[in-house]
Length: 412
Image 1: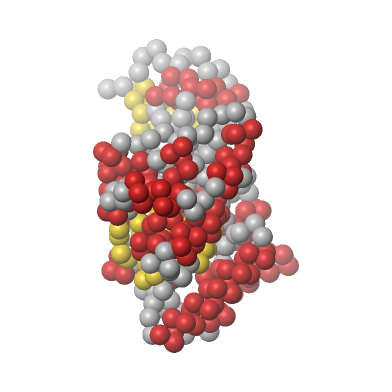
Image 2 (image 1 turned 90 degrees about the vertical axis):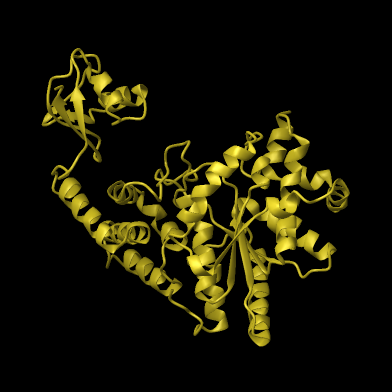
């Protein structure tokens, strides 16, 4: 792992605050000043900072949005600090309500354990395996007594929780807010206290949990409060809404590399700087130079996006695979060719166009199939298919949109 210990303190602060979002410049400056002081203090004492981020295993697979905070952990590793990757084996039994319009469904311990198995392995695509400490917060949260919970709860008021945006919206709509949802911030705060964290990383929607709950709890227990680094939320492939598998605008990190490359290339131009800062290995100087070249017209947006796509695929699949994905993209989408390899689907007697699109896996649903046909985005070889209910014409290369292909062959 490349070390960056030769940076000056100011360079380190700039590097570590890259992509941070507090919604308030004064608060950002305050956290940057605290980080600078803590870094200076650590150097004088010849120690590393303890930096952690927690991840609730609510689903088995990760997408690029999940990796934003992992990328920040990696930057601390590059500077020689101790990174603690906390799997929320206890907090996920509640579920973080910070960005939700309703209470999260509660997971069973078995579901949490199953999902957690894949988290660490996927995280090692970014983090240094040898320098990452994995912890499960059930190890300490499950040991708390009811007396402990009362003690921590007494530090906060109901008004503080109801002032949070999502809780406020739900309260104003008279939607139910369950008491256990308030405990999440306390549990996360206790994680920071138990780990004796210098720095806690999270999304910008975690600002209350980190800046208010964790720091107040740590101070009340006689510890120096941790420094909050809250990261901007990564928009999905639509460029507007936060990345989410349920919405369908996600880029899975364990998915097909060619599909990953194509999805990055589909991003709107205006979100490229956000991706530069949040999901690449590039330092502030490199990003500033890229942005300057784009603004001055010295670099075409498509070229910049290809550089971004190559960087992201390289991180998760390796340099040679990224080159192959780029070559395939150029051949298929810029030269209007077909992929050299594609999955086959055996045509069955009596199937309609709608049946084949749905059952071949080229679309996520029959309604999406009808929508793509209406948009004239479905072709068999060079012929557009315009009637979802017509008998499927026969063998050939079936194409949906720009990136999805199936070779249709006769049954038997």
